[in-house]
Length: 151
Length: 377
Image 1 (cartoon, rainbow over the protein chains, first blue to last red):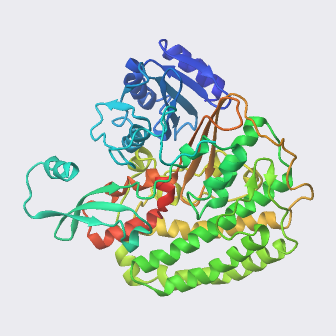
Image 2 (tube, rainbow over the protein chains, first blue to last red; image 1 turned 180 degrees about the horizontal axis):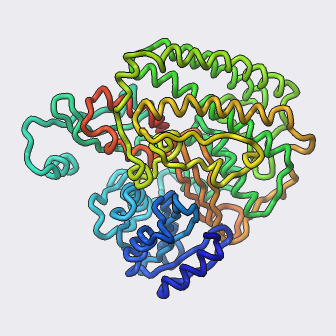
């Protein structure tokens, strides 16, 4: 599907989500409660079949932590960006999608490690790169008194 | 300690004959500082838990404090063997965001440099692949040929590995007057040398015994684990960004995406060798036709991206490399995320190597072609 067709299709199918056409890709913003259900449908519906998760990132915005999933369908070759905002910025929680796309298991561990987002139902949520004593360095309010030089 | 306990408990019953071995962080076949916690029974691998982060350098955090042209200089410290592809990804992302159209000459130069980088990277991979399996000679053959490419890089931009050649708006310098001549000489030479690789290693019976039907990865698993590059294509996963989302001069050239469905170590090996032929084929189509013109467009002194999110995918030597930039309109990015191919590829290792002998684990890891700074960032 082209971006416009995909946008129209997703708007019709996912009534609770907010679908818009971004600069490059179609973006779909869902509520945290609907994330898992939406993921399963995005992957399993034959018209969509988004089976390849190629990027999972977390972004720290002033009010919320946003988790961004870049998805591609190997069969149809269309791309969608799935986004979810967490309710709480300081103690963010969101459902895991590691049972939908297996590679998410480690990408979610990375997000937990660097941003402190907790993924519900994740089987193995431990820090990935850093030691337990570190804070969450990609948060905007993170201060490293020892190493960062203020200009 | 907790994770060791967990691995032991996670198996359905207690195996008194199984034990845990730390492979790495200084094991020669991990090609860097990577630790694999391997659960073994005799010499059969039952489970692998990779531990990463020994050289995590916080590149994504550093990017938030510097300007876009400066980000380029950090990217080639990640995957130092695909330095030019990483540079190009950020350059393209910034150009797309600002809607800057680069001259045709730049596209040609970038594509040629991409393919030369891919050749150099695959040559080094081939050297160490043989060496991991105990064949030291391959190391000398591969490095002999790689030197020629590094010399061309040095003449073009002064650096041999961390090139810093692509910038937003073009490339840093025009190509050296000798560039075309030397590249053509190298291609002519390497066309004769590449069959030697097959004679030396590919046809070797011991090598084939150790790689055929070892480390099988199914198509479904390759997609689910996001395994890209030659490793994914060896399982039949059509994931070549150059084909599906072409950039620079790739729409202008003819080349084949090498695919195979056998999914074993030998297939992944063979596809990389075939990719070297394809890379030379791409360079041959471009090298004589580099259009005249500027090597860069004039950019503003301070590069500011409009507010929004930008994503750029490129095909590095190891697979799909992506850069995701969130901009708030200032001169430095709000958030930069690098999607590194090695990260996703590494975690499929457990799937591939479980059930095989520990010596096969080394061969399987070799065909994933891991570069650790790329994983740790």
